[in-house]
Image (cartoon, rainbow, N blue to C red; front, side):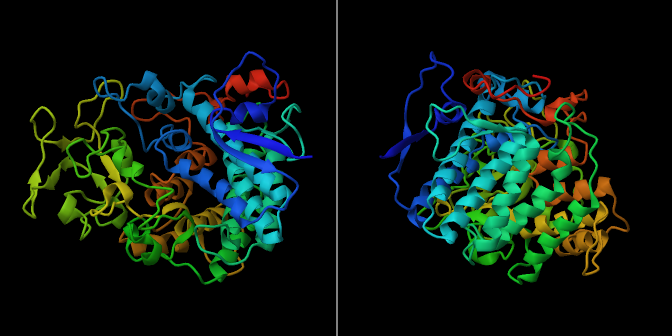
Length: 511
């Protein structure tokens, strides 16, 4: 007997949540996965990998991870970017279970988990099962991190069976087992696919955050107690990646993100690959989301960083940005943070000062009003400089896991009491990165400076919320959010429609 499963974008959450609500009608669209009893192969994995394409969008998962922090916000500019307050609510920590991006992200991730489970259940060999296990763990990690609990359906169960629900602790344990299986069975591969090193990276991330994920669900905001045994595990998995000899810190920071990062960087552990002819995980959104309409490329004039975050960078630090040959001289844009008078091509091979749509000089200012901003307010960020010859189809690989993050995880684990058998110290690791980046060396390291260093190294890469929570700073006041938010905000609510559809799901505390 054939079992046929429809996995769709808008319906994924309800499929996983069960059929407890009969009056909910959704349009079916998306892909169909047919389980006819045959073994799944690497070809079947392609559909699971394709779900990663949505991670490059400026909305949903990326927005939940970044807009809620001290390094990004989406100001309303006149009638532009109001979007019923979706961006403001994220930055000001006023979301609720009906928030559109909370719902859409839940859909995306549960669809990824289920599709990966289907492939894993009938994997033709342990390489296929290992890749599927890694991808399932990848999607489940974000479910665990964002929502604190998650529904789970076995491949053999029909949609009439209400899925069981993993608590955050149960989900964490399940993810670790998946990753251990993946790590033991994956073979060397390109950064665009699951590898042993990618599994080791995510295992280190899981153990680093284990204290957060094991916290009392009635008090998810902590404080957290980091066990030495967990920190030793972080160090052990990081050391495996280091010992592989495949990776090193890039001498030029933005080599990690340019349209030639595939060949120029040895930091890339797991990415969504893009080529000259195919860009399934096109990274252009990372530029378009902040660029002004009159810049090159003309963008959507949306998101900005916060002035306080920008001020944490010292002059000379490569990560702050600057001119990039072959990019700045052709587009007028700098890498990193763009502030002050902006420039663009003059049509004669040179650059000219730009103006906004009202004819005033286009000067990006440090300060920005979240509720009503002018066109030019806010510092813009170029993390992925696009190929000037194909701005819409630039071939930058989109980065998920990077070697510098792994080294900083190891440093943090040492700082939190872990023991490194190779004898490295947290300070020596951090300073080795800072020296390569052109920043001054630190004389000491503590939690405050460690968090700041992770911010400088990994800004706009989707890790800031995760870091702030672990360091107990997520709820602190920031620009345009003057008051400390409630501790329960470290976990997002479950979408109300998912809770209504599955009696096994109970809403998170505070919502």
